[in-house]
Amino acid sequence: MDLKLKGKKALITGGTRGIGAAIVKLLVAEGASVATCARSEDQVARCQKMHDESGSDVHVSVCDVGDKSSYANWVNNGISALGGIDIFIANVSGGNQPGEAGWQSAFNVDVMATVRGCELTIPEMAKNGGGSIVIISSISALESLGGAGAYGTMKAGLIAYAGQLAEDAGPHGIRVNAVSPGPIHVDDGFWGSVKASQPETYAAVAARHHTGRMGSVDEVANATVFLASSAASWVTGTNMIIDGGFTKRVQF
Image 1: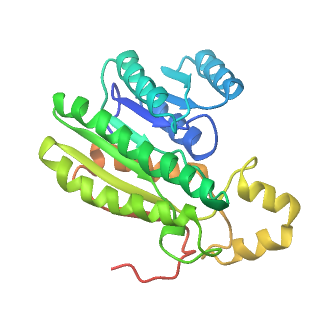
Image 2 (image 1 turned 180 degrees about the horizontal axis):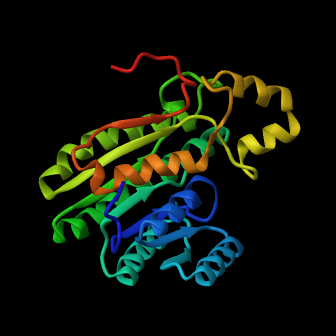
Image 3 (image 1 turned 90 degrees about the horizontal axis):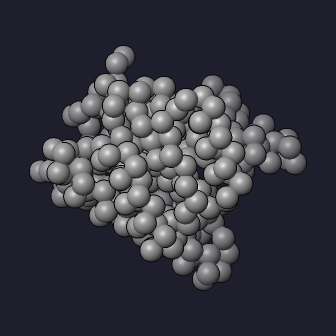
């Protein structure tokens, strides 16, 4: 399928590792130009070097999306470097840290960084006749997994926000969708560490999926980039669950 992304311009937060890196890789393979960011200077330098060596049109910058000023500068500089914007993907998460500070961090990084990114990019997309926004949520927003915490609560808020924003942005030719991954294996991520330190737990969780395995970052990227593309031109305001059947709800 031709996703018609050649020449498109995309901003994605947290594109140096894990799901974000897989999304960047696929966007580039489909012919898009990309600007992305991460907090770690070392990660940014390694990622930029890799893309430069491959000849990819990717701009990687240091940015803490929880810092309002730094984040706004990154968004504006990214749009300038790309010469416009067609796609915005909000991918970074503040995680599930304990205590009030953890809740505040999750709200600022997951929710407010997404809101600020959308508010900065929507006017630019509207100038060019439209665009697409994809917000990365989680199945933790849909079921009780591991008790009450900031992560699932904020991810639930993002699904609600995506649905409401789709209605507001639609008249400007902008589609808004959410993606909710289930357990996804990343070697240097959460489930990679569980596999190394608690193999029995990892195997039990993998067995809960219909196919008996964890998902991959590429499988999340495939769905995300599809939603971002014009191939999904009649899809907006939805939440796509990518979990291999891990959640057992009947989806109406």
